[in-house]
Amino acid sequence: MINKLVVLALVMASFVSAQGQAGGSYSIKEATEFAMSNTQTLKNSHLEYEKSVMAIRETAARGLPSISVGADYTYNYQIAKQPVPADFFGGAPGDISYLEFGVDHSMVGTANLNQLLFDASYFVALRATKVVKEAATLTIEKTEIEIAAEVHKAYYQVLVADETRSIHEENLVSLQKSFMETRELFKNGFVEEQEVEQLELLVGQIQNKLNNSKRQVALAKMLLNFSMGLPVMGELNLTSTLAELINDGAVPVSTEFKVEEHVDFRSLDVAERGSELQLSNSRAAYYPKLNGFVRHQQSQFQNEAADVFDFNQYWIPSTAIGVSLSWNLLEGFARTARVQTAKLDLQKMQMDKEMAENNLKMNYEKSSSDYLFSIDNYQTAKRNAELSKKIRNKTRVKYSEGISSSMELTQAETQYLENQERYIGALLAMLSAKEDLQKAIGK
Image 1 (cartoon, rainbow, N blue to C red):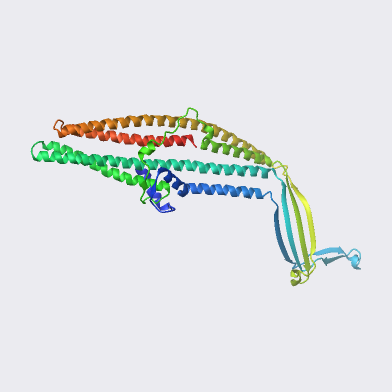
Image 2: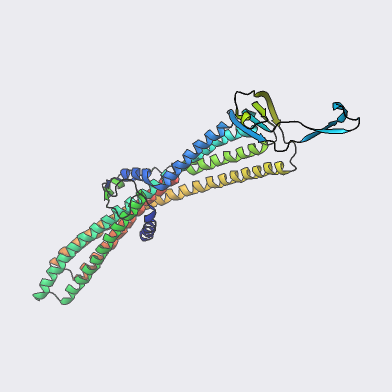
């Protein structure tokens, strides 16, 4: 499993930009804190939170006064003529004369002040932006939980891999000593060649295991670097020990699981409120909208283009104050369809929430059971490893005294290694189950 994760880390390494220097010494707490400050996923979550804050400000601004100004210059290339009775100007009765009303050039400057007085959808939007902000906050919290679990597991893998390497090194040193002693006995004719070959075979196996464990340590460190947001090839020293992490305290397994405190459930609760607000917003379309306004205008009309830009000329003022009411009384069935769609979305969200509640409870129960089993399995594996070590040590003494054969020594060594590997696997499984349970608690 670790190899697959490391391959993924290597593939993505070129996209990782770490802040600060690579490597260093970290306790598990320091590694987690570093990851919280440097992983891109959490940075993106914080950016989403900042966007939600800006959305609140933008929505709130709709209810504040807005001011706009403008200016229009017009050159009347062809002034429209208006028909008038000719007898107004001394012409024959019944005839029509055409006169031009207007000037060649005009300039109009305007200033508008608008204020929202009533809009039901605006008040719904204000409530919705707060929901969006809360959702972004929960996203950050969930991301932090996931990052902590990821870093912890990667940290455990480094320590466990290093513990495996240490065990293999100790076994190799001891077996090489027995091998050299047996070889000398063979040269002097005290043992058969098979005894030497049996130990040589075992030494080779342990050497291969040691080489592989060293590679696993390097790969586990690369994965931890990646989880922390560091370059995967950087040097890394771990200051927390397995003993400290094992004795750090168990996750409390309570029969009363408070699902309402789980981050996923709280996120769904926020999403449900968002669906409720969407329904309220659809219903708000039935209400009228009322806006207040103040408009001021200054106009200038001249026959020469240069004169309309002369502020010493007379500008005709015009000011209007009023309110604007708009009310869509009928939109066919579109508005009704939108309300019904919002109702269906809300019902679906409520069902999703109920289903998620059951899933979270089942996941907690499963994680609790797996964690308790991992503790029992770890304690059994630890005891078996201790017993197999005693048997191995006794067999070595008997072998050195000529009481046991190399076959018996090989069996004892093999049994010891197998139990040590089971112990290491049970240890890692227990630590991982602890993280899974903590994640299942969701806070």
